[in-house]
Image (cartoon, rainbow, N blue to C red; front, side):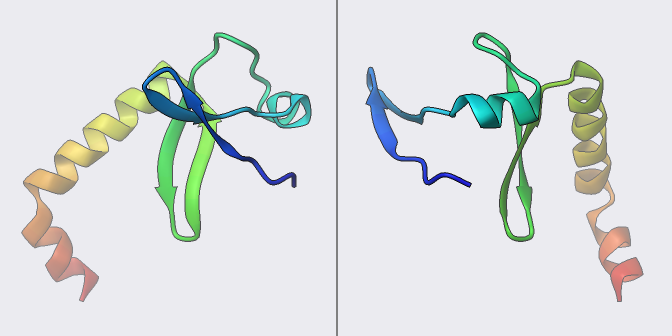
Length: 74
């Protein structure tokens, strides 16, 4: 995998994704990516409204039932 440099984009920072990475993700300019935390870093996946909705619901359930989930994890 190539090393990506962080660059200035207006008042923000960003990275330029090489064509090979865009092809592997099956995305193009103007598409959206979904960012999530993984045990070993950050995961970029093509944005899917259905998956985003499922993740929002899962986070709500985990927040509402935090104590129960902690007890189950023991």
